[in-house]
Each structure stands twice: as structure tokens, then as C-alpha cells.
Amino acid sequence: MARGGGRFLDLSEGEREMKRLGQVLKNFEDGKDLRKQMTREIRQTANPVRQEARAAIRSMPSKGGYRKGRPLRAAIAQKIQIASRPTGRFVGVKITAGQTGSVRGFTHAARKTNFGRWRHPVFGDSANWVSQNGEPGWFDNTMLRNRPTFRRAVRAVLEDYANRIARRI
Image 1 (cartoon, rainbow, N blue to C red):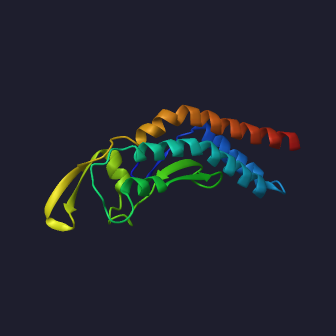
Image 2: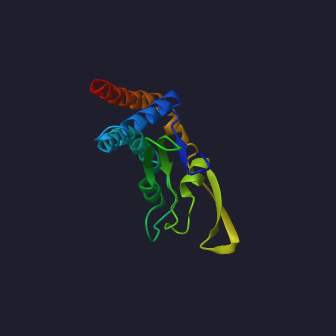
Image 3: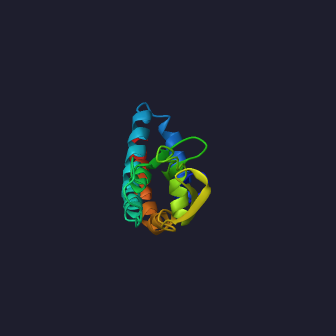
């Protein structure tokens, strides 16, 4: 997983096309609404990838017993979000697994479970530490596996909006 807390689904040419479309849409009277619709449709194409990542973390084996508070895997799954920006400096679509600070103080749970192994003190006792194993690559592998399908879906949305713009000109 990228250090910034997410994995960019690199669209390369698609990103440039998305940026151009976003800039062109600014010139139309209803451009803001069209941009919102385009962003919404792109986010919808990313939703199956997000759901697959959520399923991957939920299916990670758990060796722990009963814990007070929210389950760790459910908290990580809830923090998997989609961000889409059609204009500006960082154009693109990003799926992130955010921080989970509210779950037993385990702030970077998504990153550490994706890495595969982490250490922590037992019940906050700094003299007694244990290692725990996660599911290596549950997030990264899901993103990499879905990249080609996702690129095609985003490209289809961008082409649809490019055709809409072309019909207006």
C-alpha cells in the first residue's frame, strides 16, 4: 500500500483525458453539474473494487477471542473509501484505506495488516510485546488485480462524457 494511505489506480492517459474533460466542462453553463455527474459515475465504477477490498480484509483469519469495542477487520473495511478529482493538481481516482485510530489505538491497522506482520504491547504493557500476523497484500493485490478492468470502466465513462461534449459543440 502506498505510504500516503492509499493506492492510486494509475490511469496515465486516462488521467490526462479526465483533466482535459474537467477543464472543458468548466466552460459550459451546466458544467459544474456535468462534472459532478461524471465524478459520481467514476466513483460508481470504483465501487466493486472497494467492495472486493472490503471483502478481502473481512475474510482475513482472526485468532483473537472476544474484544471489547469494534472488531478490527470491520473497522478497517469501513475506512476503505473512494476519492475522485476531475480537476486540479492531482487528477484521478484513488481508493484509500484510512486510519483506524478509534480501534484500540491501532492507528495504521490497514497498512500493518496489508504488510503482514506488526508488533504491539500486550494490553498497553510496554514491557510485554507480541507479534501479530495479518494477510500480506490483501489491499495491494486487490488493487493490482482489478486495475485493467477498472481502467476500461473509467475510460468508458470518460469517452461517454467526451461524446456528450462533442455533441454540444
